[in-house]
Length: 408
Ligand code: DMJ
Image (cartoon, rainbow, N blue to C red):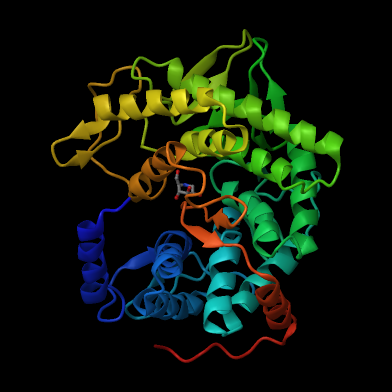
């Protein structure tokens, strides 16, 4: 964005304050730290080739490795200062299934295979699990049993499915295990979770204890972009299936954009339910600056060039400016139908994702082209591996697990 001065300030702050010098005595989320902080460092390194970021990513990842006390899955919580971790029996699917990209890329950049091997073991373990819906996994599970009977591509599930597709693309379409897992999952999504309301709007529902909830979460709105990207890269290798995925992408993105248009603020609710007469009923009416709808709008715009998507994004941007801008930054809304009621929090994904996707929607498509980069789930772009790197990748994950490298 050419914000050179701001960039230098940020770099200085990373250099002076982050991990190298001091880890706070606080319990952090391993998953969030991976997607937000390690992902951010890796992208910063790729865009600048400044060694500072790669060093920071490696130091932090070495700490996160200490959350793997139970072999296959990392624990969810860790104190970076003293390495104490809360040992879990059950794990959240999206947390253990959203480490593949960052940890693999760290191995590629450092030549240390441990990170890639760790996440490959997670993938292998998940691939062997059976459920009534092939490719879908319950949102809470242990390495040997399931801890709930909830299937969701929203909270606690979402980015696991996103990373199956992105890892296939990232590995130059070579790791076919990810492709198989993605195809099983998307078949099950389309056969069991994809519904159309009586007014003709497509949506995705959870399956909870065998029942459909007919509730769409804002978090699920990434799925339009996921289906569009999958169809575009020909992951199904079948024109009829690609068309099906593409149609789902277009329809689901329209539903999510509608959820914004239907409120008084022009911003979409956290969850909405489909009533029998086909109306969207907000069940959690708040807006917390989430990115998923503008993410799908951006991806569909890149592949179609249809200015309708820019119009939708611009309306959302204007609504954010009108209702969320406060003197010190941006806040969310407690009720999207009553925009005077605001919360007091600027989420870190607001700039990392929501504003970034809105910015890219109006930028030249050569800025982070989608045939050269994949976005991690926090919208930090990572370059797709070249042939030599793919070779190294397969060598790394085929080697035996090495001992976890020494603590920093
Ligand atoms: C972000 O941290 C990521 O997009 C994640 O995959 C889902 N939740 C938030 C944004 O809503």
